[in-house]
Length: 155
Image (cartoon, rainbow, N blue to C red; front, side, top):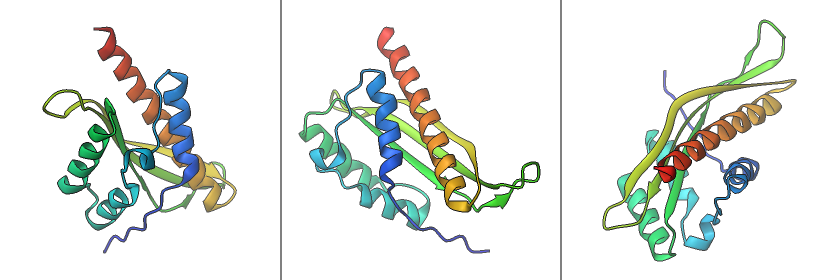
């Protein structure tokens, strides 16, 4: 079997992640403000299920140049929809990996991470199930990253 990927960067997922970080009193800077191109991350992920070192380096350099202290990166991989046997609803699983880099100092350090972990979402049609799964995955991963950041900063 050949696995194929399509990429997209849904605005509502970014909004949900920003909501979690903002509620924890972390200011979220939009990628365009730091000259970071999310499409380069998406293109890498589609090609190889990973982000290339060149894309990471370009993002880190842009973030440092913009004066940012941290850079958060996450990938969400949506599986095929299935019918949930218990409810008869559409069900979609999403695998998420995420991390936060500390940009202070000479070297970039990964100070917290989450995943790979899977979340699911149910819905009356595949689009609703996918949206619910993405929101569940994004919210949970962002909350986990915030908790880790708070723990590190309290030490």
